[in-house]
Length: 252
Image (tube, rainbow, N blue to C red):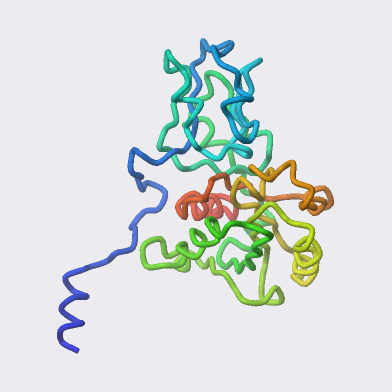
């Protein structure tokens, strides 16, 4: 017992003190930066980008489709595209996820998520979420599990995942939504009491990702329901998710 206490004291506090100011390893691929002077690229974007996130005329990168492989940056001979390690990339609309030449990360971070007064009033102090893996590879699911561990500890902000939709205030969707999971996803959403929110986490959930053209998908859920928060990533980083949700519920 005394040995365990000694180890605990030696380890100290492992939780990240300020999740908003946390800095990730420079190798992390986050917000893409496109040179303001970039009008076109000297390679075919469709042949380089596996998901069609990169458009070459005019140049843009859709983070909702991007798997952050970094191939577009490697193909640029004059560094027109650079992938930064900035991880505050969640947004409250699909349009905001499209990065254009000259777009600055600081401006994106400030305006990407607008906390609505109603959401802040209802969920600002406590938010319970039901996560549904709708055909995902388990990458995003594992990262979302990490949100509750001692490092990220989103429970200190009153944000938790729950086992039943009856206990939830909202739903977090991962995976491209297969035909087999579409009815279960709809049933889960309907089982959550009103009012409720919807969060799409990961490239697959936001756009279908590398599976977007598959006949095995049924993404009609996103046509019927308004998404409150989009969290890009392949997989989603826990800090991206936690910070995105905190902005959504109005927690500074």
